[in-house]
Image: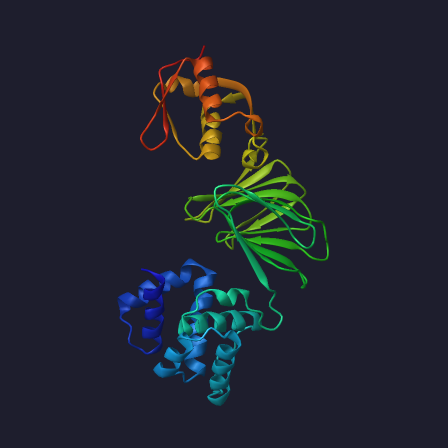
Length: 338
């Protein structure tokens, strides 16, 4: 179901007009994420504490004055205040109210940027086909990989430093023991004081990964948690929440950032996996013997090496013939360990 269907189910539940099957569908959606639950709380809050009618909703929908919209809804709440009003922690109350108001007036996500009370003003960066660097006000440097989104405060003002990531980024965090830094993804929270680490958490992938370069990192997904040191990583299964702890000295973990790939007596399955991740394509090997072959090579993509360079090198080393498919992937035909 899409978002509008879920909202419709919330209203059906509030009006006691929801079927057992629809209730199961709604509960599944609520269990998917904290954002879904906050949205539902916001709609419920507005429903229970205001008497906004259809005419007022229509009028609100055509107005873009955010202050007027919020004041109007607040007046309705104050005039219709009920003793049994549900108590929501302040930060959740504001976010929930914003979500409900956004549904009522059809404005969308402008409220994420709106400053309610002490809520920090948020900025958002979404990258296209190339990575971008962000320097936060605390001096932390974040390199955001392609097709990724980072939400972060315009200025850190509270006791903690928190950002939200969808996609992949390398974090070099300015040390500040009194203000812990946390990266929230849809799958886990990564907490540090001052360190450098990589987080890969794309929604369309089955796993997310956190690997540490320097310092110490805590990864917590609500089901399990791990403390990681340099050259350690954790792979989080999105469906089960299981965390797999690994020791890694893979020189190519951050190749998307360094544009350098180094293979030293590397096994071909690992080589092909690194290349697939970097170039966003898939390799198929016709001769399974190749998967037992070691491979040594260095590539610097910032200084002229490219996919053609890689394919030429592999062809010379193993005598394979790369054949491109219609989807842009490659089949390595023939060849052997030489």
